[in-house]
Length: 125
Image (cartoon, rainbow, N blue to C red; front, side, top):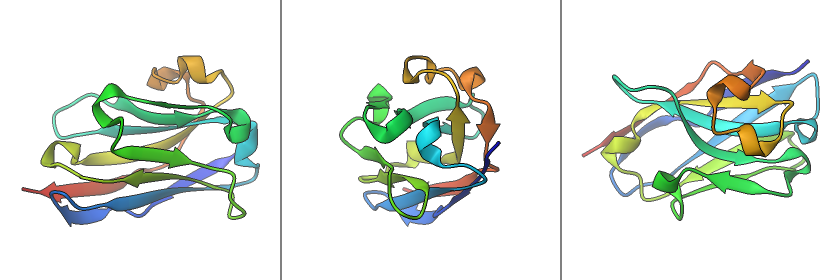
């Protein structure tokens, strides 16, 4: 049992950066595979980045490799997503999710058992 809450979204100009944070209550996030997903206007929810149980492995969607970095294991019990060089196409609601399955299945949003409410990221052209 874990409750998730995202924060850090907002409005940013193209080329700027934001850092999103997924805060957890009830359980340590080290017990879960953690993922970030996003859903842009008129688009399906898609995988962005993930980090394995114990924070030993990371994976990224091809579209954000080299731009986004996911991290965990801090004393605040959060998993963070550093987003650099943002583009208008990155505009979306960003969701944090937890899974009891392997990171190998994280690219499917259906693999996650717990979800936050999302935080809006808007990138202006």
